[in-house]
Image (cartoon, rainbow over all chains, first blue to last red; front, side, top):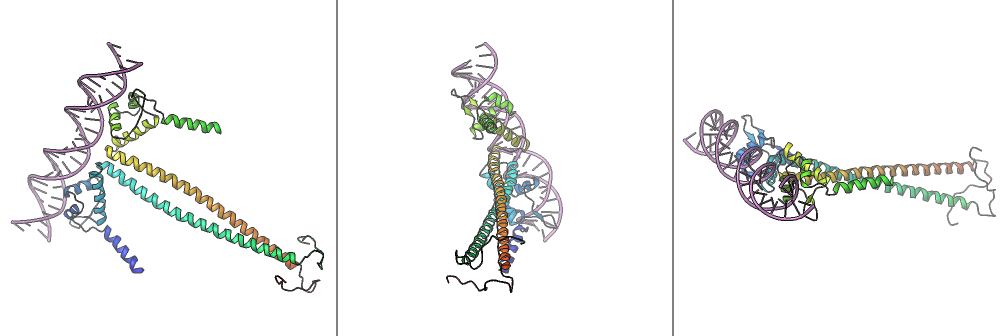
Amino acid sequence: MASRRTTRVTAQVDRARGVFMISVAAELAAMHPQTLRMYEARGLIEPQRSPKGTRLYSQADVDRLRRIQAMTTELGMNLAGVERVLELEDKLARLQRRVETMERRSDALQEEIAAREAEIARLEQVRESVRAEIVRYEPPGTSLIPIRPVRRGS
Amino acid sequence: MASRRTTRVTAQVDRARGVFMISVAAELAAMHPQTLRMYEARGLIEPQRSPKGTRLYSQADVDRLRRIQAMTTELGMNLAGVERVLELEDKLARLQRRVETMERRSDALQEEIAAREAEIARLEQVRESVRAEIVRYEPPGTSLIPIRPVRRGS
DNA sequence: TTGCTCCTCACGTCACGTGAGGTGGC
DNA sequence: TTGCTCCTCACGTCACGTGAGGTGGC
């Protein structure tokens, strides 16, 4: 279990780590290397840099490039639109996660209500049986002590 | 209260009703009439038509045109991007409303829990006082009747 | 007749992608 | 030296907006 978590964290780190130089990244994204430089100039992508200044693209960068590629090629969007859509998709994903969290919370609250309902039912059951026991001490006409309303602080 | 609702419904109907011919709508949206025809051909807007075939734009149409205008002029987006962004903004608005509904529901559930907590506290309180009353009937050494464990069904 | 509507066609502009050209370090 | 990197500049293409041109009904 601990090892699985470690593996996942490592994979995440790797996904964000700059490993491809521009020619490789361009081939993986099916783009011209010059296009990648252009996208960077417009702020659509920010690859890391080696100490010498060479761009280093991560797997996450390549994925993002492919999403951009789909929007421009398949939908015919320009870069201004791509930028805005990427923003909105991020917002949407965050909101989606929030909805899921709230749904789980809602379920948990429902369970809390059910648990308290059960507790109330249990307490009422106890009260009923106590009442039944008390009544047994008072069979009409056979009680040894007179029955009177209980008065507090008497 | 009923009249306020009626007013709102009327306003909504008016907002969706085709009232402006193309030259007026174009002026309200600060656009060329030909541009409006182009947007319609591309499916970005669907004005109603008079029996004679004249386009009739509603206030909602004009608002939509202004939103499109802002995206193309201020952000430099093309129409493919506008289309996608309008879709995503709709989705986002729906999800936003859902989050608000869920928040209200969550609050309501919290209140339900609080109400049941109060009921539990009340029942426990009752049980405590019943116990206290029973004890009061059994002062050691002064009871008129012998105290024995209660046996069911005896 | 004027001014609107409808339509189609064509052109100018601009964004984007890509190629060329020149530099520098493994 | 080869093949990559870096950069800037320039050109071809395409989408979009707008204008022209011709029609028809209040």
